[in-house]
Image (cartoon, rainbow, N blue to C red; front, side, top):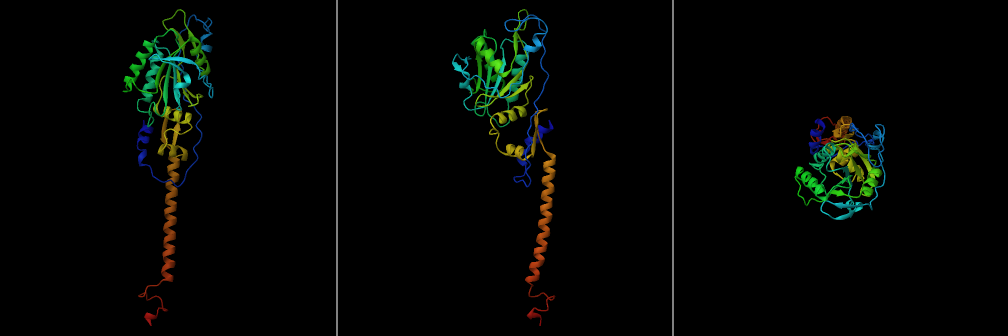
Length: 311
C-alpha cells in the first residue's frame, strides 16, 4: 500500500517542526463483515429456532468493560493460572476461538499472526504486549492447545519458549464469564459439523484488564494493531518519531483502512511556514545590513563627504 510505503520512509522526516497541529481524536472502528453461519438446533444457553442465533452468536461492543482477572485457566503446558497473571503490565490482544473449529477460528488465528508477524511495527511480542488465546470449548485438551500454539509460533518464526503468547483452556463457567464480559456471543450446536456458532474478532485490552477496543473480522492490519495497542497502553507504546508525528498531525491514522499516512495539509503548511520565515529572515538581514553599512562606512567609501580621509 502507498501508506505503508510512506511510513517506511519516516526516518527522513525533518528533525524540527515549525507548526504542530493537535491530532484529531480517531474514533471510527474497522467494521469488517460479520461471519454468517447456517444454524439449526442449539445447545445450552442458545435456545432453538432460526431467529435465536443472530441475537446470540454475535460480538457486541463492550468498551471499558473490566475483565474478571481472577478467572482460573490452564495453559497449554499444564500450568494453572489466573487471567490477571498474563497481563503483567502490558496491553493484551485477546482472542476467543475453539481449536477444533474447521472454519473461522483458523482464519482468525492466521489473521492475527499475520498482523503481529513484523511487530506490529516496532512493537515486540512479550515485551510490549501479550497475546492470549482462550478456547470456548471446555472439552478441549491441553494437547490441542499446545499443538495450535506451536503451529502459530512457527508461522511467525518464534521459538516454543516465546513469552507473551499463551493458549488457555478452562471450565465452561470461566469461558462463558469471560466471553460475556467482552461481548463474544457463541452458541453450541447440537446437530452440526461446527461445534459452535460464533462471529469473529479480537479484543484489545489495557494493562489493567479493561476492554479498550473490539476489532471485528478475520484480517488485522499491522497498522491497526499498532495503533490500538498504543491506545490501550495510553500512547506509551511505539514512542519516537511516529508518536511525535501523530501528536503534531504530521501523520494520520485511518481506521477504515487500518493504515498510517502523511498529512499533506500539515506538510503543506509546514513548507509554507518555512518559506515565509526564510523570506522574512532574508528581508530582515538585508535591512539590517543596509543600516549597518550606513552607520559603519568603509574608509574608502567616496559617497560619505564627512569621511576625513576624503578631504
